[in-house]
Length: 190
Image (spheres, rainbow, N blue to C red):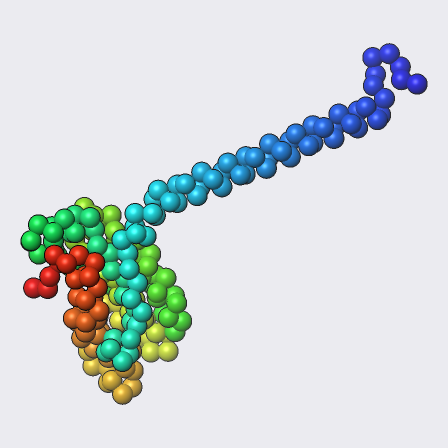
């Protein structure tokens, strides 16, 4: 029998369980709200970029061994539509590490493109980021700086590293130009 003023053990346990359920619900709803806010923030921050960036896969048969990311800023599109030539800004990736895993360099090129798209918007340019590899096996070839070794590496030895400058031009003259003309017919090559 409970004494006056003191609830029995069952009543206390039921009260604790009720508080625990309420606390769990609050935590769950707080997490749901936090995830929803993060998702909205991600869409607001990354949405415009994701709509304007295009990935082009490497095509050794086409003469280029690296992937490319192309971002057309709204201002560059307006400039091209007005009949004026838009400027192309090439920003090579620089992962800061040597790796034979091409995905490391692709990921870095994508993040470089994302990080520089604000600059491209501000300048009103088309941003091109090649995902040039920086190999671990041939670590002396510093591709991200386009050093001397990049220009002297034999095509038979490392076709993926041979003349990256020409690989970039091959990409630009073929799929790059073709895609830009389709995306915005007023963008023309110089």
